[in-house]
Amino acid sequence: MLEKIFRLKAAQTNIKIELLAGITTFMTMAYIVALNPNLLTGFGKGDVTAGILTDGTSGLWNAVFLATVLSAGIGCLLMAFLANLPFALAPGMGLNSYFAAVTVSVCTAAGFTSYEKGFSATLSIVLISGVLFTILTVIKIREKIVSAIPMAVRMAIPAGIGFMLIHIGLTTNAGIYSSEGSLFTMLGSFFTNGPGSTKKMMGDSLYHQMILYVIAVFLGIFVISGLGYIKFRASILAGIIISSVFYWMGSFLFLDINPFRSLQGAVWIPPFADMAEYTLFSFDFGSLFEIGIFSAIMTIITFCMVDMFDTIGTLYGTAGKAGMLDEQGNMHNMNKAMISDSLATCVGACTGTSTVTTFVESASGMEAGGRTGLTSVVTGLLFFACMFLAPIIQIIPAPATSAALISVGFSMLDSLKKVNYSDPAQSAATALLLIFMTGTGSIGTGIGIGLITYSMIRLITGKGGEVSIVTYILALLFIGKFFITF
Image (tube, rainbow, N blue to C red; front, side, top):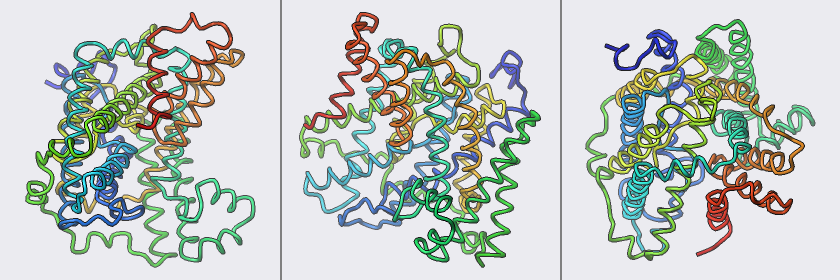
């Protein structure tokens, strides 16, 4: 039955490989289960509520948690059965932070004192953007947009994603930074000025925790790289397990921390009642008129553009690395993959979360050999299991999954050898794409900067005729998005 549905033999894979790949993908993106509700509801660092009152924040957190795992699971199944591709979906990083910021802006503009009121209005915006994305895909406009991306920019996308994975692994996921300094400030202080100044700046507790983080991350990287060199398919999963065990032991012995404390008094019953009360089909289209039709339209377009280009970049970047593109640089079932992504966004809005998109962490499962939708099925089922097993998922330490992200990032850098660095348009577009994609954490932003740079330099050097009119239109749209205030 599985062979008939997913055509495993044609993809040169088998059930064992796909199972391993699905588990690997899930392990590297499981952080979103807790992080997404934290960001959307203002828990933890960077409280997004900005003083706006909440009507039972814990209930909203529970609702968004459940919406996160449900939308991720459904999104993965859509990708599996519509497109038969090994990509996993979940509420996207960057897009969830933007969602939170828009929610606060809606509350401020409309005079709401309830965060939940603005939350419902923003869910309406996400639903409309998802429907718009679906329409653009069905009527084939998306294909024209993809073909308008110059080959030079396409070749830089995998490496840009690679650098972004490395950056995510060292910052957002592993937490090797402090509130006082960026990643590079902390690493520069540690490796240049020595442990003394770093310890003084961070304090004893945070310093010792960072040391354990760093060692656990590098241990995982070394294990994954070594096992990967001898073609051991479970190298990423093995690296995660070994790094986890090391971190747990270090926490017990050196930090006097019980890494399994979250299991004590854990709640294992899914919070369906909270989701029904706070987020399920919780749309408020009327509030869009209160913030201004033009502002609402521009916000919808922004959500749609960012999701579209993030998805295009992820699909092309990861598929290119896995050898799933043909000679013309096209991917099988690309249109169905985009439809799966856009429908997943609509599902996310209906359940109560920000834009659902294809995750770059899918590259980890593809690196483990995943080639069909069976990989996505496994990942999706594990997300569904999170409804009941969230406390267990939370004990997997961030440094362990960071090692996997960083290692996959390393493997995606070889696309840079295809860039013609003697061509100023290609070299400049590549360099800026890499910097902006990594620094902003947005694939769409990196692509936008790459398109603008490539188009402008081609014009300045008298080769503007080599650039299509659609490319110029896309570049102008990104210029408007980045620099024009409405």
